[in-house]
Image (cartoon, rainbow, N blue to C red; front, top):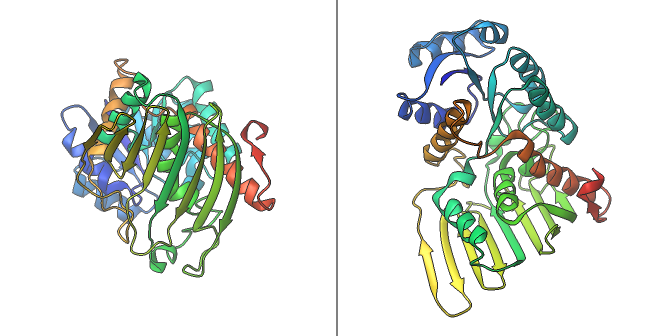
Amino acid sequence: MKLAIIGLGMAARAHVSALEALHDRVDLTGLYMRSERRRISAAEAMQVRAFSSIEEISADKDTEAVLVLTPPDARLEIISTLAAAGKHILLEKPLERTLAAAIKVVETAEQAGVMLGMVLQHRVRPGAVRLAEIIRSGQLGDIAMVRVEVPWWRPQDYYDQPGRGTFEQDGGGVLITQAIHVLDLMISLCGPVKSVQAMLATTRLHAMEAEDFASAGLVFENGAVGNVCTTTAAFPGSAEVIHIDGTLGTAVLEGGSLSLHWRDGNSESFEEKGSSGGGADPMAFPYDWHMGIIENFAQAVAGKADLIAPGRDALKVHRLIAALAKSSADDGRRVELASL
């Protein structure tokens, strides 16, 4: 696959490392950033072409696909330009800042007939893959209850960066920027959420526009109930946890490590080394997960695989986040996701 890059945001380090490891399967045709100085410097460091505009990438016959790493406020125009030129797109989360804009991004790609993949890399972590297999096989039985905790930490200087934690640039706070990964994984494992009752807040630990705390009760479409508690105010930060209680056993996915507790008294565990970026350094995690997403995208472009995280599938977590925000704004009133 011949791939160009637009933007080199916070997640760029993991993407660049992953692309270096995939050099025999993915050829970089070049990159574009708004800052000419940074663009030229980065292109020289990566030994690739510095495109002068998004339109130049769109017109480049060698470029099959584009990895978009810009903040979400720049997405819709970029996707429209690339899709019109027939370029397949791999997009760093989130799709966009609002549910309506996210739907427009997905529809734009679909109407142009191009592939839209999402960088939701928690789906390819070994523990998550193993848990998905166990759930599909029926070993846990029917899912009855789901409990999710994201006790992450970001220092104030993280939010002091221009645009961070704002609705104009990021679309919100902890839900759409950090917890989206865990909420997406929850949905991919347990199925879509039917309704929510939520409270969002900004704690005294941060000065920021959007929320750094969100808590909610959930009802899933399959009848299971659950709750989530997500924050970036839990110093010093620890691994996210997904508890899934089934009729035959309980699964606990903590970071990437999986523990299974069967009703017959047996137990199993699968350990994964490495952090999820839940502490002060949000990029303190290996690049392997990004490599899995990019490799899958390349195979999908070649017609050899289905996308692990297609854009339309990512709308489920965007709809959930929109419902959580709506419920909180209406004093915790229950919100049916089908109404959004």
